[in-house]
Length: 339
Image 1 (cartoon, helix red, strand yellow):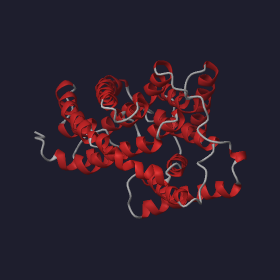
Image 2 (tube, one colour):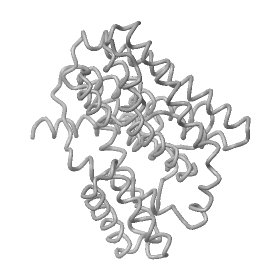
Image 3 (cartoon, one colour):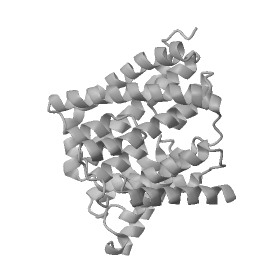
Image 4 (tube, helix red, strand yellow):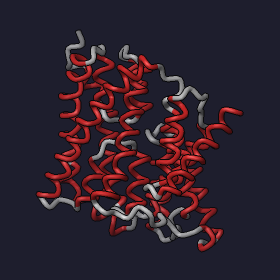
């Protein structure tokens, strides 16, 4: 209990520092950096899995509430950019496996699943089943999410001039209580039903699907209030930072440094695909960048909501990325020589 209270306090201090300094996304980046520094300093840091999952349901409802019939119909026109996602994943594997294996000396299973830009839990499960180093995989993927999520707001704010200070929703006081209760029901019921049927990413996809159905029928007329989105940022940011609890200097020198180098490769790949999409006039720059940036699904959803991007476009591409990696990674790994 003390460790949990300490983690909340450290995350809160991070929010305050970012707020005072006028840095972008204080509710997300403040907890990330504060908890990261505390974890690397040796403090016992931990989160609450149930609360973190509930916060992900908020994002699922937020996305689902934006899906009108017009938006759903427009998704058919996304196929040219969606078709590029498997190409990016294949390039990530082609570059990443030799990078981790030959340059850093990881075994094949660890190298392969480190190079796959999928969800953290999925890659840990697949990697462990294949005989990989679970601790190394955890740190590598945590670093990938950290670097992508931490760098994009600064790129968007200071280089692209995107306004990241506007509220991602209306205040709770302006939304009818019945709508607030409906959103809460969408989150909990959608999550539990999706979990029962074994849907991957159940805490986000279940609420998203249920909220989308109610939004398209006109029953749900709002997305979650600004306070709920801020809370989701806080807890998800805290979770990213606490992934480094208990890390040793040896792991920093090998696992984290290897991950940082690969993050540079991934950012270059994302930049290339973003530029290609923009030059071919397939999508606006903001949507293209957020769609091809290989960060976590929840974190990219938050950025899309706050930046005012086309949330459906961004989420569709990240869903496809996760699906391709989950379905394709175990199959593709069998064709590689793991000797």
